[in-house]
Length: 247
Image (cartoon, rainbow, N blue to C red; front, side, top):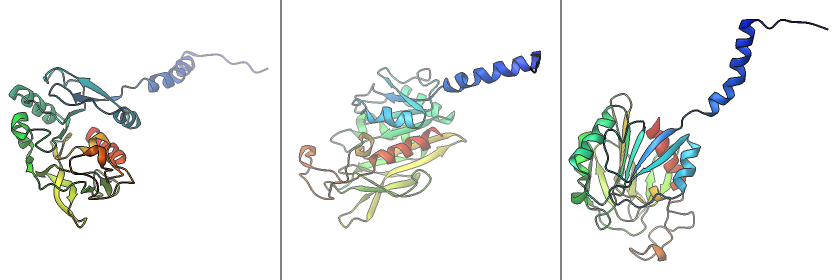
């Protein structure tokens, strides 16, 4: 029978090895701030699923945005606001991004969210991005996000009434009647070493709409109940988009 002595260094090594799995499993997830203080609708359940896949958690906030409320978060999402984002709130978001945070800002067509009421451009123009008025309406025309820094391949995403985004680096375009990329409705930019900003001028992909059964330019205008929307890749598009924003 072989005998051995547990020395102090050996005991320490055993204790460290036994504690490592528990430490690793308790690592804090990246936190995503989802604003709901400006009339935004609740997030679809898909967000919790995607967040879990990318090692994040989404936390909903019903109170005004402040520098303090953004502390500890990697990304702030302002998705479909329809109330004014005040000067103090805009200043807090700008400070957050300049310090290395990320921003996802989504504003749909004017009948859903007002450009003037929300003061959207007063916020995003700080980062060299501008939302235009509504582009000509084409029902269920669809959009395309091209392969690049955000998306690993071309992604078919829904589009049915929205705006263009000027400035930054475009990465998704509304399709025209012939199915060719027209004006960009999604653009990105970086701020400093870590800050990242994405602006979308149409929000259907952000609520995971679109199916493989959808046919472009089909359905009844302005009637979601009688339209099967084209754009089968909303899920993977949003996963890749959120992943890029929280890097």
